[in-house]
Image (cartoon, rainbow, N blue to C red; front, side, top):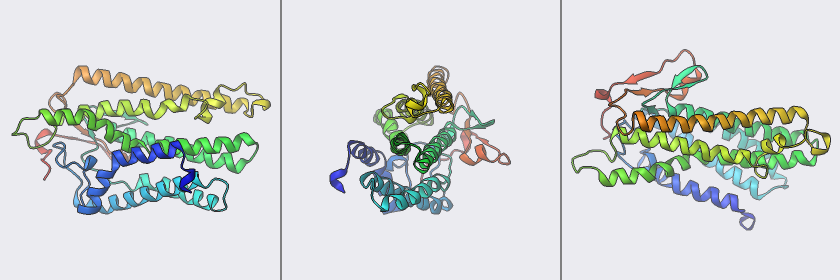
Amino acid sequence: MLKRLNTFQGFHLAVIALGLFSSYATFLLYGKWEFGGVAKISPLKPLALHEYSAMVQHVLLTLFWMIGAHYNLATKGTGSHVWVGRLSIFVGSLMWFVAPESQQMSSCWPVDFLGKKTSVDAASVLALVLVFSLNLGLGWYSVVAKSSYQSLEDHKLFMYLSMWSTLTPALMRILCFIPGFYFASQRPAAQETLLTLGQWLWTKEMAYCALTVLHLLPFFNPEWSPYAKMAFSDGTPKSGYSTTQKIFAGIFLAFMAHRIALSIDRALNYSTEVGLLGGEKCDVFLGTFYTTTFLSASPSVIPNTTLGMQM
C-alpha cells in the first residue's frame, strides 16, 4: 500500500505533521491543548478542564478520518474500499461537531454568517464544515449514481477536495506561525505571553484570509475540481454533464469567488482600521460555532479586564 502513496497524500501528511503534530503531541503527552503546541501564545484563555473530554473525541475522530481517507486513496478498487469509505464519511462528518469551544474563538470584528453575528473563527469553521460536507455528499452520490465513467472520476475528485478541506486546521497554524514567530521575537521581556492580544487577533485575521484563498482556489481548476469541469462544460450529454449541473457549478464557483473577495476586503480593512490594536480599538467578540447554528444561543463581548492570562 505504501508504494501507492501519491503526491497529494504525501503533501497532505506533510502539512498535517507541520501544523498539528506539536499540538497532538502536547495534548497526548501532557493533556493540554495549545495552539500549535505553544503555551501562553496570547492573553485569551485556553481550554477549560470540562472541555478536554470533547477535545479527546475530536482528536481521535480526526485521526480515524485521516487513516480511513488515506487508506481509501491507496486501495482504490478493492473490496474494503467501500465499507471503509462509508465509515470515513460518518467519522469525517462527526469530527467537526464534537470539537470544544473556548475564548480562543474570538475576534475583534464579528462576522455576519447565516443571519447571525459570530467570530471570524466560528464563521470560518462553519463555512469549512459546509464545504466539506457538500464534497462528501456529492462524492458519495457520484459513485452511487454510476451513470457514467465521468461520475467515477468526479467521485475521486470530490474525495480529494474533502481531504483538501481537512488540511485547513493545519494550514491555519502554519500561516499563524509566520508572523507569530516575528512578534514573539520582538516582545518585551516583561510580557507574559508570546503575542499581545492585538497581535494575536491580527495574526488570525490575516491567516483566515490567506486560508480562504488557499482553500478555495483549487475549486476553479478543472483538473482538480468537478465544479470547474461542470461549469466549463458545454452542458450537453457528450460532455457528461447536464445543463442543470453546469448552472449549479457556475453559481457555486461565483459564490466561492465572492467569498474570496470578501475575505481579502476584510483583511485589508482590518489592517487599516484596527491593525495590531485589537482589544483596544474594539471589544473582543466571542461568537462560537453553536451561537452561529442555534438561534437560541447568543454571542457575547469579552471586556479586556476579564480576558485573564494563560496559566
